[in-house]
Image 1 (tube, rainbow, N blue to C red):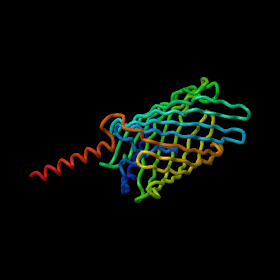
Image 2: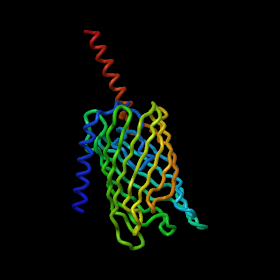
Image 3: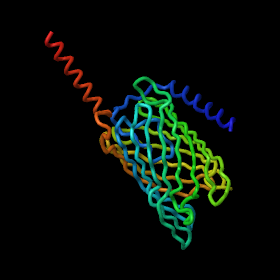
Length: 292
């Protein structure tokens, strides 16, 4: 475990040095930045007082006679400039193997994204995302293990030129085996590269590696590609396709979803509130200057 912690710290340090070497891209502060649809999470934290909803659909074709459907949902709330609270669920799950089909609610995730380091007035360079996966899925139907999972992910990213961006994640967790099986350690490494090709379109490509998803299973490696289309400052559509590279990875998966900032739930906070406050201060300063 000490070696894993040292590797985690080394990863974060190297990523930060790489990020600081890049010139940040100028972004409108009110632009929505969803954490879906790829596996990699960005360092961005939802603005103070804003509630951001991310919902989608995921179809997975595991093998010739097995496929699954899920409807993941996440709610993110900006608590402070450095903290975001979130709750999520796998939604309604349907798994089919041969002629057998199981349907039910999936697991529930509780987490928080904390900004560890950011440039003044810029995007966070390093964030950390601890998560607890609650076993709300029916283990008897094979929809979950019936045991909780505990994970923590280190997030970093950097802008490349004026239009490109790369995010890198490293995660480590303790996963429940279920059915009396011992817990096991698991690791995740993911890299996602995107480009702002227009004011609305943001295509991306991603590669990720899981040490193992199931007890006794092998490592899982997959590639996916997709795009996010921003509909103004508060709405975004996304979609993409994933293909398995390693033997234990699902053959193919397709996904799509919607992200929306539904409103300010904590009073006079958030990007737009700060903009209005800045405008009021500027107006008062102008009037004061005129009256002198």
